[in-house]
Amino acid sequence: MNELKLSPTGVIRYETCPKQALFYLQGYRTEAKADALIFGSVVHDVLAGYHAGTVPPDQLGAAWDQKWSAAIAQPIAYGADRSPDGLRQTGAALFSAYHDVWQATGLRTVTDDQGPCVERRLFVRLPRAQVLFEGVIDLVATREGPPAIIDHKSPGAKPDPSFPEKSDQLLAYQALFDANAPLHGLGPAAQIGFAALVKRAVPKTSRGTGPEVLPPHLVERRSAAEVAEYWEKVADTASAMRAGSFRRRSLAEHNSPCKLCEYEAACWRNDFTGLTRGQDRTLDL
Ligand code: SF4
Image (tube, rainbow, N blue to C red; front, side):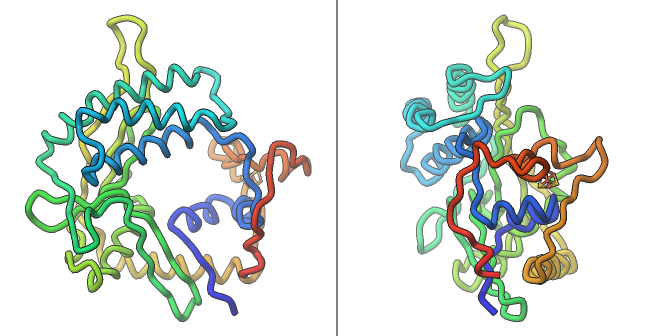
């Protein structure tokens, strides 16, 4: 049995719809990525530089502008009310506010012997399930106490404040971080949470709420029982994948994952237009 690589996102993708996970594992990707994906990835990149100390506060706007210009050279599928220039303005507004919001939190980036804990890739081997579980933690920060794990998001609206307590992604990062404690030597994470840069459009008049940087919303670490249950879920996901269980999961109309699925045409009409094919990872199963 080959070792299977899984990530927090991979587990969520399988839970969302096993068939969607199969298309992904088979290497299918959209030719034009969604604007939200590109926007989020440039935001992550700029924030990584800022928190690692390579992008000074007064260069945040310039870093955003330069990276956004480079990113939009690729094919991007823009939503109905979004454009490259509109999103550029949104990013500029977010990064003109970011430093002050961050300073006011009293948090600072944690550093270990590998440097600032930014975009830190961590691994855990689950030998019984033959899984290599890996995830990238955006930021580890502290207020001169135990560390907190922060994941950056760039949603279109204010996030649900109750979600960090339920998020599998944050639970997975906590589990990964704690399992690597002997390596990084920072001890277990005390808190976990999301920091949202809300990418509303810049309003055309003085009325209306535009882009908004929210301070990290941190919650207490999850219990050992929840962590154990999560590792069981990872093992179960691997074993279902190995068993070839990749059924469609369209759910009900009001909560169907098909609405946002980039494989909808391929799945229901065998139409693979707009998809490219990369490395087939089902061979690892
Ligand atoms: S279209 Fe629906 S059923 Fe098909 S892969 Fe996507 S989410 Fe799954």
